Length: 167
Image (cartoon, rainbow, N blue to C red; front, side):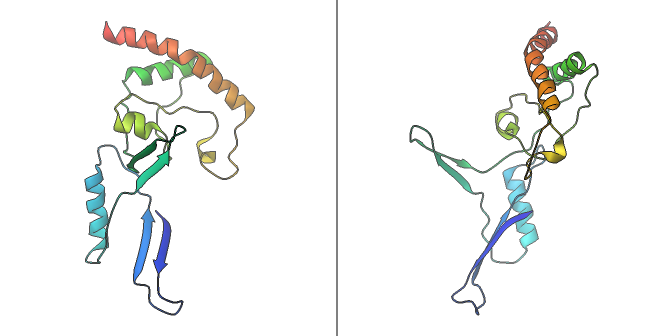
């Protein structure tokens, strides 16, 4: 998705000599940064263009400058991973039924924990997916209460599942 486009020209009635576009292209699991750049090069064809992954620069609360590529790798956790099994058991305990396992259409900080660092990660939160990351996002109080119960029970059930998985 093109999320920003800007051009530079000498005057309002001249042809721009520079155009910048920002593309938000989500990664699928196992896709690499190099593959994604190659895909964009193929789409650009013979046009003279420079393709780069932007750099994130932000000072921490202590004043240290943090930098890193705005690279957010796709990720997927196996349904047989102890964390996924524990999450399903937790929903059965807290809701009386297991929730289906699936994927979200939006991004989370899991791109760092699982995508970059391989730390098993699940997505779970109150509310409806279609309301996430939108203007006027809202969550019902009953959804917050249900999520609270899930978060309270998951650590113990996960530890049990890890113990079972290592026996």
